[in-house]
Amino acid sequence: MFFSRKAELKKLNTFLSGGSTAALVYGRRRVGKTSLVTEVSKSFCGKTISYLCTTESYEVNLEDLVLEYCLVFGDTNRTFSTFPEFFRFLASLNEETLIILDEYNNLKDSYGGSQADSMMQKIIDNLAGSKVKVILLGSEVTVMKELLDRGNPLFDRFDTVIHLEPFDYYDSSLFFPSATPRWKADAYAVFGGLPAVLKHVDTSRSLPDNIKELFLESEGRARTLVERTIMQEFRKLGPVYSLLTQLGNGKKTYGELRDRLDPRNTGNLSKLLNKLIENETVVCIHPVNRPDARKNTFYTINDNLLRFYFTYVHPNRSRIQQFGADAVWEIAIQPSFETYLSYRFEETARSYFSRMIRKGFIKGVLDAGTYWYDNRKTHKNGEFDCVLAYSDGYEIFEVKHLAFPLDRVLADEEAKKILEIEGINVNRIGFVSLEGFSFSDSDYNLITGENLYSVTLE
Image (cartoon, rainbow, N blue to C red):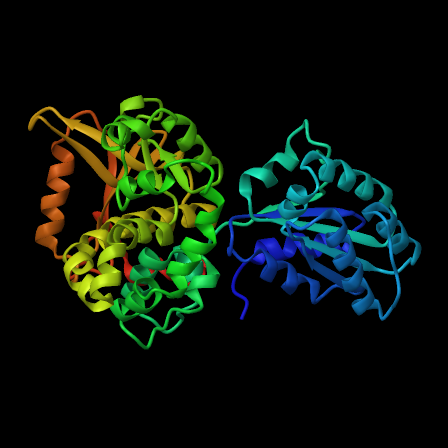
């Protein structure tokens, strides 16, 4: 079953129906690139050849691609000595043809990197005006982004470029249409936005049972995806596991990471962080009111699937093997699980406002995120969960992952704390409460769990 991706489908359909020759689709592993292109190819009026590139030799890749051609066209005994020769032959057929080269980064590995790009550049240029279209797909984000650089042979060769990202909290919820807002929010907090994992989450079972099966069993789908697929990209980068385990469910400054990691592994910390930011594993965040303050620059894992894995699974591998899933849930996960979920719900709330802004339901917002404050009266500092910055001040939201509706007394107490802080021009105060509210008041902007999953946001 195919969900969402309406904008991406529209772009690719426009590409297929127009006069362009080449498109690029890239994104991290198991994000749904192949499914997206397979879905759009269903509407293509010609023949489609889809080939998964391997890290085997140039010759093997060419031979296997030609075999796919033979199967699709019903042709036999065709051989070609080079990729350009094969593509020239396809163009000579004068037949609407779509070539999908999946995991193009593997072909680069098997053919000397830039050589593959130079070869593909010549192929695309020679196909101009023909009835052959090419879509390149790739999972090594850093490698695929390089194809767009001015110095790369393929620069300016793609009329359509799609950077496919994991589903956000809302699109992830489409896998669980009948679930409650709490179930949807908590499932996203644990399993993130990769379709390859979400399709295995069973809403007829409890969230702990899904965690035990998908994360704590030795062959659990979520666990094996992280360990055998996603993390394979990082095998040459250095102490990635140590760094991501330190980040876990929180966010840390560069200094905190440096102090917590083994001194023997921190010499290239800056380089490692930059690599992880480039491949979208880690994100660097700043409060909206201190975008350039180094001491308020934080690093955090950019995906809930990896975040849960490095918070609970990787540090407890020996326990999982020795004691089993039930025991590890009880001793290592359950005691702090509510805290984990509440932190992740703050992120969901921020994603909700981003979606509202993109949809045009909220206007005039200059920035959205967190806000770092120093309360001079109480000599305390801290951070507001979610803030919308306007030209004349801020709208501040407190985010509550409570098991019950937020009441007026607690709301007033939170509002009082906000208003006591000096130096903030507060336009309005609001609350995001997963279980809603036991009161109504036009003085506050009240957002419920039901609001987060409104059909108007689709």
